[in-house]
Length: 299
Image 1 (cartoon, one colour):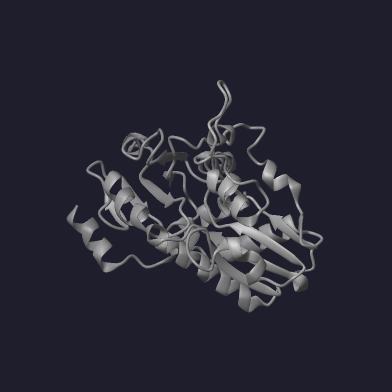
Image 2 (cartoon, rainbow, N blue to C red):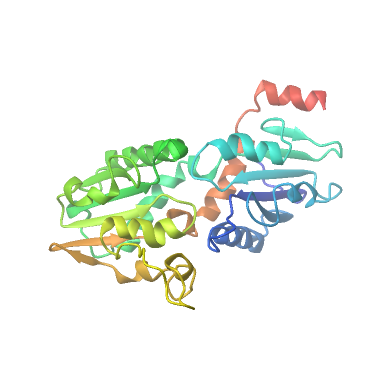
């Protein structure tokens, strides 16, 4: 395994958002922590919907001191962005791309693919319901659902299957916002005294602040009336620091003599830092595919 990263840089890529200020926060936080650890010669972030853009990332690292760049997608699963958008915008030819400058870019798997994700989900569930007996607790892993997010739904099911076989919880379910099994049916889907809900998203935003709580019945339905002059809309109010995160601080929610615990999105966990680093180590530990090797030879 490689141990010398003195001429290597790390680029963490995320989706970003023009409307959700918290979308890029986990990616930026993970980059800052890895930078503090001084694992790589340089660490940067780039986004599809925010600055610096993915196109900007092509010019972030001086090829003289930085001979190789590890690209780690901060995404829950493989999909359109990891397979099409990121490679296109970063001008990647495959897993390994050699630039005209001689700088080599290594395209790692998204963080959600790493086996450490399972333990991270268990850790978050345990932290959010420290007093809950796992034998009397159901764990729900929530993904978005619908065909537009098919791979994330598959990833949620994979993690639920992995945790279920460990036998630590009375039941483990993968549930979705927009397709069965629906998170809104949690009362029918579970019978335990305690229910722990963990959103399987990279960042907290309106789905975790507003939509899932509404579906769980721990927040009021979204208001459809027009706000008074000068009054913020529901979505504008959700951007307020006073509102963001409040829903996670009221645990446990007492509903029909049961306790429901609601966690922040898994991607906000500091443990993602170790997964990002591990994805670069995993890249170097695996054999380079013949196709990638040929691309290097031709460049």
